[in-house]
Length: 568
Image (cartoon, rainbow, N blue to C red; front, side, top):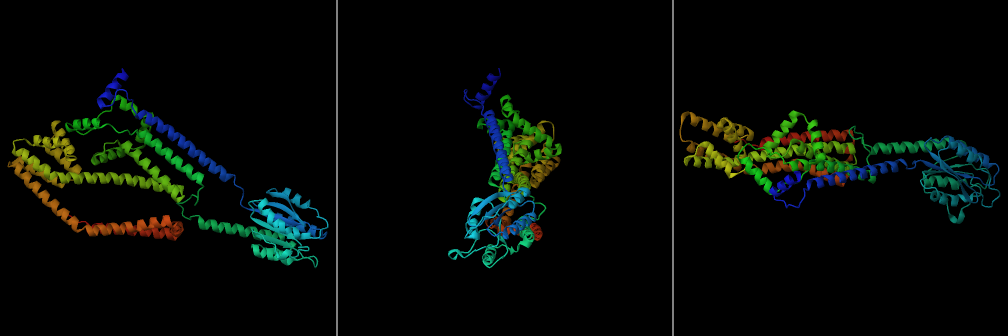
């Protein structure tokens, strides 16, 4: 029985008998796609977090210990290395390399201080060698490639027989601290002093090993802290990091897209056929404007997800807010439920929040601005539709009054003349007059219905027309001639209004340019030169100036609006 009824409904709508409803398929496909996108987004975010969490620490040092054949030097070098290790901060990892005629990686960087101390104490002399400390050359070149991620080097050497090999000087690509001691005449410590100066490091004797360690790593910590303070916005409204990994950005985009797909699927928007719309329009001519009750198939096509989303939205909205939104939608001529319009605003806010979060790299700021811009966009759209509909009503009123006057002169009564206007189907005036006729058919007063329409449409001209009709009913007279006079007066006022608008077009254009110019230039500079604009929203002085500029723009806009607005 249900299948037969569904076939009849589809046949009445003009669909072929073998076709099936497309809305459930779209709803299920959208739900599945939304779930898959959400899972991908969460996986990308988790992978980003995992990759960020598994990154090695940024502070790593390699201790290069000279274990040449000098018996007096090795104990001094070991004590200096142990003192340097003891002064390192706890978050610094350290490794050990020994060199004499050659070099050897003893211990890779580690945070275990006991292992490092044991490795230093276990170092033994390299034995007799003609080159002695010449292994520093291959050690400096090879340690950075063998152990990636190093931050600093420390050379502890007595520079035994460190002659100038083929005119070369020891060089390093990382900041290199030098702890040196000259024990005899063949110790060329000047080579190591030049190494420290060229690489940006420090040099000292073995007794100052702890001091040089503390000075080097404290300086690096302060430098990083200052750099972080320069990059991090001090504003209390911005709490996110200034940069995001690509995988986290992709994850956020996928999550925003999943939420958008879920909301769109919940709405279940499938365009109705033109025949259904024509049938609904014909029915609305003969009664108050209302949305016809959905058929059984249409009610089931919305899907469980759509009904659930609309029910949740209805619970979140207060009855007063829902009533106000329904009234505004009716004034704008939008045939949607308040819950559908609210869900559409949520979708728009999610899209804008996702775009702003990715562009600005500030998630909290993007979400707040997205919600604000989405709400303002939906509200301004509704307000513009209401204003446009009221203006269209005012423009159609003189012609309608002329048509009513002609119908009255032909012998029609006022309700019959208004019904002729409704049959012309010139929206929005036909739909509004149908309200007044429906109230009159239900026992109400026609003049009261027209007065209510004038209030809804904010039309002073219709108020005066209703007043003239009431006066004519009380004292008598030619109503057709009165309506023609009113229509002529409205046309003259409209002509004068358009003339004033044309004369003030230059002032209005100047106001629009002056208001839009700072916004356009600021957006262009933010996109093209973000570093130049950063102090404007990352410093207290910049935020104060931005607030003052916003207030001045609002005051200037209101002032110019008052100057170019002329009442007629």
